[in-house]
Image (cartoon, rainbow, N blue to C red):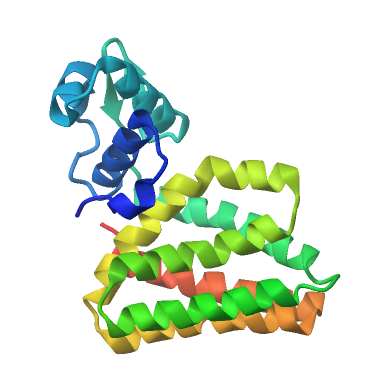
Length: 223
């Protein structure tokens, strides 16, 4: 698996390298405990060492590696780490959706409805990359629309790991067939229904149900 080039538009060289390494680490192509050096990474990517340093700093901030002199030790992302990541996602997204219980958000709801349609179209065409992208954009749209600066800052601190985990789990999910992935797409209607209701309690139950399903999916699809 390679990081989708379409997702890297506008990214700096360091960000491109970070995305590729992040995918390899989370997908366990690079194993926990492995030592990676600046020189090796620079050679692998045909890059100078400056963007490699930027990439390693980003991965260190995400807790995927521990920086050492002239390189890093891979810490990886185990299932417990991913569950904690989803706990943070739950806190952010439940807060954002409760915030959207007030006001007129018809434009967002229409956008989300179309995004689910795109997910189902991706299933039809066997395109796990586009499915993963649309899945991520569904959730990010909700967070951004809530317009809470500190929550957006927190979301931005985890968004790259979230994107990568979604990509990996989606690729494995597609191996189970169309019926399963259509179910994954359809469960987003729970969230949509909650937002349409504008009822905080209905929204709360919808978010709880969605993330309970996601937790069960994680245990089946991650290494």
